[in-house]
Image (cartoon, rainbow, N blue to C red; front, side, top):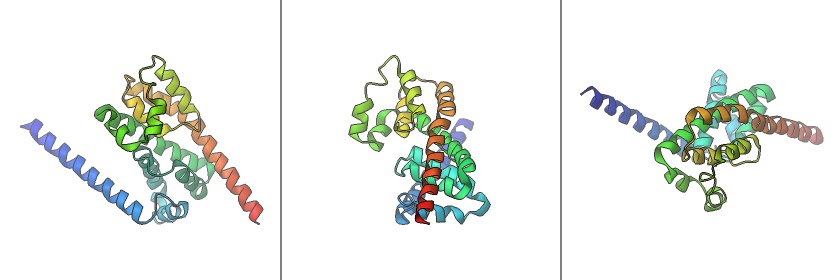
Length: 197
């Protein structure tokens, strides 16, 4: 009986999360939230002191549902909070999203990969999980700023990699790539402003 009640609560909880996610996706497409840096910036500023929390959620969301270019969120973090705080919030959000993507892939297997990613990307990395050096390849890729991190997190979930190992690689590997993007975007944006003025 207790197990049945628990399962009912889990079903309701999962249903609510799914509905909220769908509502946010619909809102995002309707307002161009997923394609415009200015719209995201305006959206975040409305939350005042909660803006950092919302940025973390957006960054986690864009890993799990890779419809928003990650660079947009990184740039918004820099512009609103500055390079250091922007880096911290981006890092937290991306790490949370990466772990969520890994766990979702562990549960649902290759189904999500088939639905979320292009055939070109899947074909390029399809041999990785059968490679005995997958963990090494994954670790190196996560350290690289240009790797398709969202896809690789889902791919890792279909391998035999343990959550503890995956989390360690993400926590240690993400700072370098995020810092490269964050401080690179900050420098580029400042250079652009100085050229305009």
